[in-house]
Structures are given as C-alpha cells and as structure tokens.
Length: 277
Ligand code: PXL
Image (cartoon, rainbow, N blue to C red; front, side):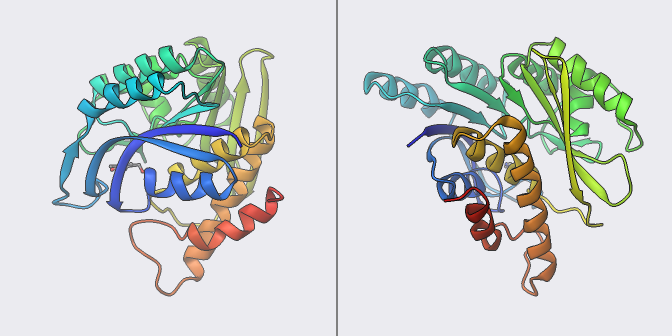
C-alpha cells in the first residue's frame, strides 16, 4: 500500500484540512500519515476560534520518523500557518524527498480575491518559494495572483490562465494545475501545465451556481489519493473534478447541509467505485 504524509492543521469542526484529507485519502486505499501543524476549534472563517500552534512538534516528529526509517510516496501540504511552518516543510522535503517522494503543494491561503484571515502578501511570496520546489501545485486563481503579484480579476480568458501557469512553472514547479477555472458559462474545472513537456491539459464538468468553503481541500485530497494510488496526473485531476462536483451535488440535495463545508462524506462511495476499489 502506498503511504503519503499530509502536513496541515486540524480544524476540529469545519470540514477542511485534516478532517477531509484523512477520510478521503484513506478511502482511496492510500495510507495517510499526518503531520499536524495546529489545532483549531474551527477553521478561520468562524469568529472566535481557538488556536493551538504545533510548530514546535514538527521537527521532533520528523526526527522520530527518520530514526524509524519511515518514508513516504508523497508529501502533501495544505494550509500552513506561518513562515516558520513553510521553512519546516522545506526541511522536511529536503530530508524525506530523497527517496523520490513527490511534493504536492496546495497553497491554501486565499479565495475570491482575498487572503484568508491572518495572511499577508509577503506570506504568499514565501508560499511561492515552497511551490517552486513542488512536483505538483494546486492553486486557485486568487492564490496564483498573490504568488505572482498580479491583481485579481474574476474575469479572465484561457490565454491569461496559461500565462500564469507558465510563470508558476518558470518559478520551479514541475506541474501547475489551477483549480476552479471556468472559461464558459456552466462549466468549471482545472487547467494544468506540465513544465517538462510544455503541454497543457484541461478538464471541465458542470458548474453549479454555488460556492462552498472547503472544496479546494477536497479537490487536492482526491487528486493526491488518486495520484499516489497509481493514476496518471491527468486522470487524477479528472477524478478530483468529478468528485468535487458530486460533493456539491450532495450538499445541495442535503436538507441538513452544513453552512461551513460540503457533504463530501456521502460522495465517498462514488469516489471509491470510480477508482475501482
Ligand atoms: O480550507 C482551508 C483552510 C484550512 N485550515 C484552516 C482554514 C482554512 C480556510 O479558511 O481557516 C484553519
């Protein structure tokens, strides 16, 4: 069985970061180790959340894993809370990337033209440095704009997106896949550039006219689960687009849907069937 490690926070309630990465990646038949960065009562879109930083635990946990001879097929980072955590992830990759572990970075820090609570444009530049080392990055348009120092506009065309992807790859990422891309009314999906071949790949499915928190984490987790499980990158992105759409459908159909995240749980059986597990 493949084993990956994901580095992100535990938002105890919130259907994001570790509470979605663990169930999704495990359900896809991939062992999911966790390097938790912080414990929050909820994600930061709630007001009054508690926050307990675990930065001090990261290096000792990594050192113990090294001593035990553990390694990983992929290192998947999501929401990181500080410059120091990004530096620690860079050290972690330096140490655990030697055996060919792929680094997948979801620079979860912004959406809809705005940085999440607590982040600054300087933080986005530091995140761009981590993205430069990655095999695959999964930013949305807002995160891309902050990393490239471009103004955000919800209006764009394919040429603009492809230009941004080229610039992200020029910084060092081997594959840059932008999530939540829509060139045509009623369709949304992903556009990826493979820096080695210079080829673009895109895939779209139905765009339901709603926006929910947490879909980026769900998308990234499904991509990592599929990719680590042996699917090609292209097929992994298709699986993630379709699964994210199914989660949104399930949320819209759920009379008890939560306001803070999507119903990814009831779409897991579809995902598992899709990947033939
Ligand atoms: O979904 C990304 C995310 C992860 N973790 C925390 C967050 C957010 C987005 O707001 O606040 C703590």
